[in-house]
Length: 363
Ligand code: ADP
Ligand code: TRP
Image (cartoon, rainbow, N blue to C red; front, top):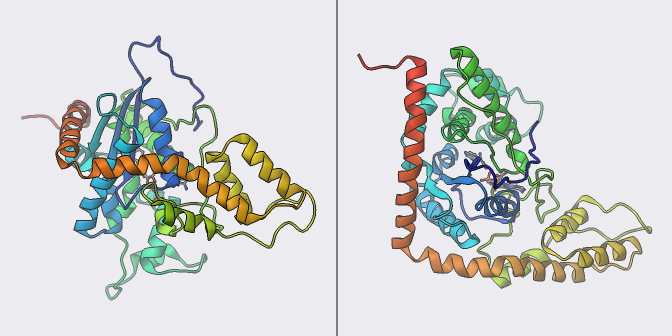
């Protein structure tokens, strides 16, 4: 079970706990917005939400220090500009909560190197770190290397899922709204929770699940014809993009030579544009272009113009608020100070229990 179809129940006086975070590796794009942030926004009123900026996770791919700091501020401003409300949700920076790294050390004692190495995201990132291109490369051997090997895969990358599990379990989260690409990490989180409970003979951690308002987890496609919009793929539309930049990106999106016969299935790049359109445009607009594709009258240039227009309707108001909030250092630091205080209080309770359960006690 990965998806949760529950609708919020106001009758519950104890609200369900929601946790999610985004790594501070640049600016937020439409994939982050529709895959994660828009779900955060819809959950704020009905759940006990704790949203953070995963700056320790960002370190696994070695950003430069100045960039890291700037990214943390950008994402915080983008969270707030999109509508996250610090009075409703706990908003914090991961590294402001030292209980997280301590519990990460403790949980790592119950996590296998093998299961971490088999994680898809680890394999991808390890391949990149080692400069491997072929699918068939023996990645395990390359990772171990030899004394002369220069390339290395950092241990933080390997234990990424442990840290993510701690982010979630330290709050006893019920729901974790994330995009489809994070479901394997969530599966590991549940596995680690079960393992901890059974190893110590306790019923301490629950099993958090993704949350999609009854729908499927979402994968927002890229503009380059690829399956996923992502920072490292370089195919993103950012919330902060100005009008000119955004229009240019959309107009340059990859398409094909057009339908060759009526009612044919669109190629991947064209289907990607329809998928984006389904996110931002009115249903009649999508239908108009679907029909035009089916009867072969479609003009991709018109479709792209419309798509850019409809994306701008979503992003431009957010962009204006980002610029405003980003320059207000005092406000930003107040928000994270308050958030860290609250997050630490929750985290400290869990860490105390975990230490006790594991036998770390005062002499
Ligand atoms: P990126 O892949 O650009 O580095 P992150 O890994 O920091 O972004 O993702 C943060 C959140 O946004 C996660 O919940 C992730 O699932 C979601 N997300 C990122 N890209 C997409 C996408 N293309 N479609 C759907 N969700 C996405
Ligand atoms: N791994 C997530 C990503 O790349 C970010 C993340 C870190 C996260 N800790 C988390 C998401 C806890 C949800 C809950 O997008």
